Image 1 (cartoon, rainbow, N blue to C red):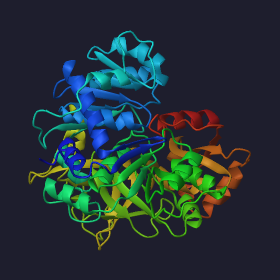
Image 2: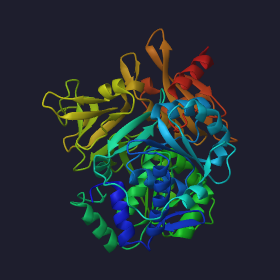
Image 3: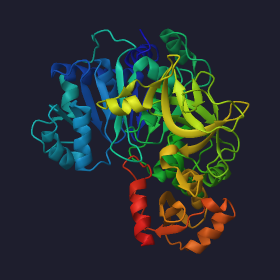
Image 4: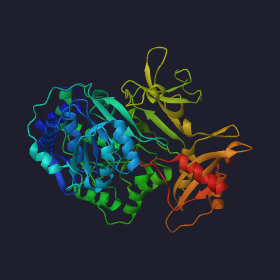
Length: 528
């Protein structure tokens, strides 16, 4: 057995097979039951010519089928590919083609989209429909795939060099597939022990899971995002039960926390924290089992965090720093927020640094602004994109290979990293640098604002000026003058937006990230 996700899960299935591994709604599977289900799907794929290195798409809402399909691919050394279910046909066609998926598991709710796109994806040969019959000729229902496969194993040996790909969407352009070797991925996301040193051997992972008392953990984000997939594996390496809701709904989340007695919960920034806080404030839920709420993958603003903490006074609220390409690298320090400054303490084994233009670490306490970078256990490139790989993964003069995250930061004398934001979105107005994340957080702290995106637009005098797209809360009204007064109490004058565009609904990327191109067009139209 190596540090390989499929090997480790099989070891757990043998050691704690009767413990519940996963719950979604009314469905639940023990480790042994989930292992057998994944075995059947793996044999189904093998019998249809899916081989090691082939790509298997997962175009699904959260559910048992998602994690069973994920494990099935890993068992035969195929590569799982996460498909964003919010994508429209043109985006799906890009992803199907770019990832070169050979087989696809998909929910029948997406039947029409899959039917329109699948014939245009030349590598896609096998379809498995989940949740009912598909209208697509040749698609095999999930239950039939299970019945046709064997429940035993008998798979070829695996290694820590097997590949795992996570497609990640950015603020501009199409998504890219971050490629990992599974041992690096395992280590980058906790090494089987998120609270200390990585496990020394694969067997130690199994032994510690056996000794651990049953614990219930919950991943609120969709499994189509790497954060939820990694949270699932982290839970399993601890011998815990992982709980999902099929689709994000605050009431369903709190009902599930109460029913399953959830101990820890993973969320993704304000987009989840704000509606969860509102649902909790409405009352009627027993959340006494909850001990930790951890946010990763998106910014958690101070105002939203404070509200959640007010409603959950006995719960630890953690803010983590990392990315699809880097893994979990740092934790927010006390008082960290976009409004007051994002401050993170790197993990002892993270290999995190802030580099200058010559790829040299900046001097702690110098105030020099550099790029956050990580060495060691990192992704090894982007699938089908050598140009982006070359720009993002660089080697310094000493031979160390770095991942450049794109985040700009300084380093304090105690090693704390102060993150200002993405350099690509930084607004230069009259020679002053403005990071959109800080201004967005202040705007979202106004009680009448539901969402905000800040961008730069051309200005004859200053080169660029700060502009904001604002979505008011339902039923609320707010003016540019009110927001100007709110911002001037909390920001330096040059950071305050000069132009506002008010919209009934914010446009974000299918991954939930700010669409800065759309925001720029919107505020330019408002200014005109």
